[in-house]
Image (cartoon, rainbow, N blue to C red; front, side, top):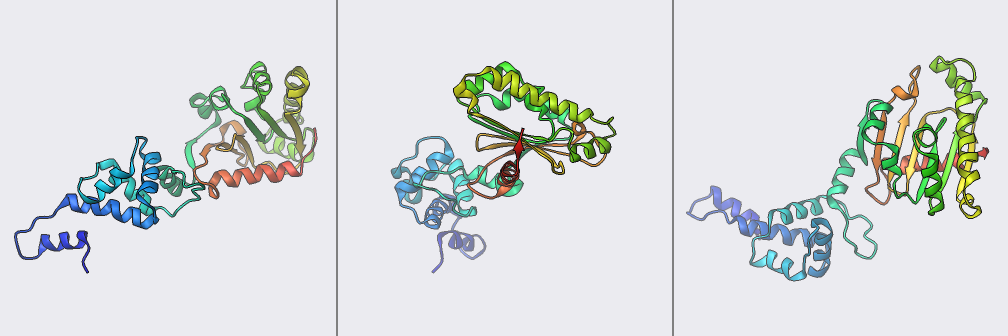
Length: 284
């Protein structure tokens, strides 16, 4: 038996004066999207509510499927819903299908900056960390936290409940010496900078907060090949900065990644990088 869309299309090219009923096609699209999800009208209304950003009731869904031509944004939402595989909705909560489409296409990648200086100009650290509840960072000297962000503000964040975990490339270790040679620095240049940043974090931040806040600050070092600076903010935003052969870190690209799905994607990959390195850390 022919569906509404197929019948309408046949009428365009076959004999007879019948015109294409676009309203009927649109209503069929809403019904097909709901059927694809296996949802009741109430459940589908909740899904559309979260996606569209305005209140959707079950009665609206019923009308859009039978008598009323659905609005354009509803049709776009239905198309996105049909195209995406169902994520883990938990208690049937609405998900952001548009964000999931972007996640599929760009694997969570939100922005790319050719150099770190361009990144800092467009997205200052103060904007990134404002209101953060958890900050995890691993890399070389962690200048983003220790040089471009105020000690006072970092102490305030920790006092307000922010958890801070920082992992530095071990000063005067084997792999920091290799990086100094690769970037053409004099011996101990990067080690001295990293040791200073460690001191700033220990003495100017951890050493000047309350005993309760000190428990929320953890610092470690590692002695492994340096590949990325990774900054994870809460459980949704990641800034990943590469280390290129024979190029200063400041001249390397920066990737801004925003988590768009419960699992998989670039955010999860870099979170796993941090977690694995944190487990292998040495005391600072």
